[in-house]
Image (cartoon, rainbow, N blue to C red; front, side, top):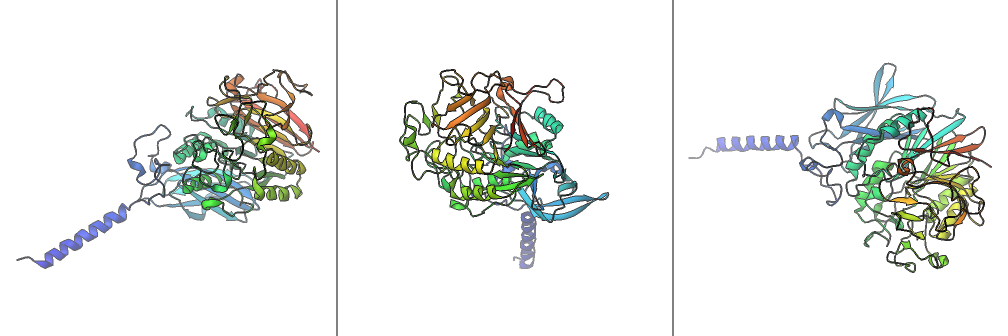
Length: 539
């Protein structure tokens, strides 16, 4: 006869064991997407090894890096972690050093989509350096320094980089050594920190390992571009879904939560957005400004609101975004209803430009406001106009440049894999803002060339360079530009490198420097690319 007392005890014991096992091994939260970020979501530890990065690190190394800015006496610091196992705590702590010890000032939950957490501390003391430490568990830490505001410095220095191609997955020792030696006050990554499209978390962690020694101890601005969110090109169209191959119809190809994850990891530490209202499908915005050392930096999203060309303008060739016919009518593609920055960002630029500043201001964005390249990818691929550039739509470009010029700002961007210094023309040559598009970090992927078809200089060439093709030109959209310097891929380091911009508050000058990837700036004979440095006076 069955003894129900023992059966009940056995069932109770099994229940306790199951509950204990479930508590110690909870099921990971299910991601709302399955086709992207597969290396870092759900049961990520069951994935095979990948060529991007080892995600199964020792548990005393799970805090990968941190990124921060300070604005309006508010510190915003993003902690980036490796993926966590279900049984591990999802709490990360922020500590600051006081006297000879560490004091915890905040705890935050780690988001399992992207594995980042944001600390926000109001009333931050910007008058002194403060050392910080991000902690997870008992042993995992990442330490750095929150710099005091350099308001007393006569010169503010910005390092600017973009396009961290996965054609080279090695570390970036040259960049780290050079940038830390030159010791900029702020570092700006203009986009394409990740080229692995559908695996942002793994690629973002790799980027962090490559560059974290440049931003461990200084503020950093990172903004995502098209490759970061998994697309070869991006015309955001306010967040709509893109269904065409290559996305020329406008919008975002992948799940909105993936896009939000990318933007959260890369931009949550930026100052609060000017207007935080989300766009379609709940995708957020991050356009804002940061004042550092008396210099006011506007941070734009020049892809998010831009119109896609497909179905809106007469297609000029096999691709809706490429124009090869030099005899086409540029006015035929500058049509009513087309958007570049969008009304919201134009309103922001108008307001930002009207505010007083110690120096002429700086606009930071993903790409340049003209067609600054003639040859794309290979020497046999000459394009007359590329609608991925911000030279189109022309009316939108004009509105943006008028506001940038009204603010007496200079413009810094990336994306093009082709370093250039250009003086824009709005109504005539030379009446617009100066712009420096910095080179690619790794230029072994889709290089571009400045190479006029007639191989002649324009009117008013730069007298201070041996570069053959400088001066006044019309780009493929009939926009007026004055080319002052460029770096074609035949240059040192295949044209790869970074920009350094010096803002002299006493002399009221800006100096654009352009450094090749493999130059050692600690050597007395270190040389910049031909054509640099370029110093401009400010009005």
